[in-house]
Length: 455
Image (cartoon, rainbow, N blue to C red; front, side, top):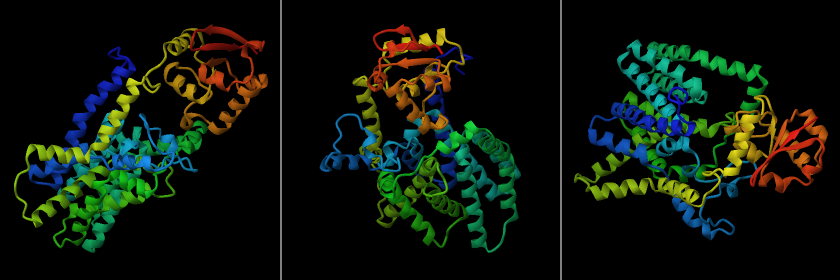
């Protein structure tokens, strides 16, 4: 899109985010409509799905009472990393996949993949109800498309559908052959992208390394419960209503299956990317929450209509963590945090690299700078994001050793062509770069010095 319309990547990113929102809302409303006939219930569920977050904001209010845990201004999540490298913090502040508003605010591919998950489940439910093969074919096509850019959700789709078919067969005390046909039709369409990703993981060392580094562990249960807040508790109550109901429908079994499968997947020790699989779970919780709220009001014969102010206050209470997220970003923006601003000198240095080096030139910097360079210079970067740097920890240790000793052998063995030195690197380097006869200063300004390696 950026190339076709000659747009910058930033403009394209924001434009696509804007267009994904209606796609998400429409697909969400279609799935919600399958479970609710009344428009009022559909609207409330959509509001809960779109704006609800958790109780992380309450957690923040108690942090000043814990020694060393007070937060001033921007939230620094590094304080909450455990010995395994897992963030132990309420998920409504840092796991965008788990919440619709956060997903749409964060990145378009989250919102788009969630929309596809909803449509695949909707088409599956329509097949189970109408036994029309066209729904299987459409679900298969969408699955194939989804898995081409988000293969994680193979587990979400097929584990949920498989468990539902199993539970439905046990309840009905017979195997429904058409359900298995649907399952295998969707699986057949999904096979090409699944096979491709598995082949690359086993056959291409770089992809093998990428996969092995893609460790995204779900935080401990208390932080999940706080993160989902009212949704998890109201949703669990709604789940209990369905489990006890004597008039339980097949679509209710699907909600029950979705709930238990999700909890299994996001804490399964065999899955390295657990928290990725929270995507879409908020839909299940939102529908179950609406069931519980509806039941609570019906039991108490509360039939009056809520005022606009009451509705706004209810949604505000459910979504307050979203305001904290936006507020945190605004603070970062106003304080000219490096997450939002690139210093002019660094931009000039990156532009020099793009104009004056070959496409195969390998650039060395610290991990933090390398992570930035990777996005802008279109050149190989020796050390960058852990998930896309082969042998990341080993390379990080080598770079740290080089910064201390200035080993010529390291630069030669690793094929380094240029050093990109900012204030961050200067703080780590313990030798005088300009005294090394194999380093030639080729660019300098107030923020950046670039050295060419002559070996």
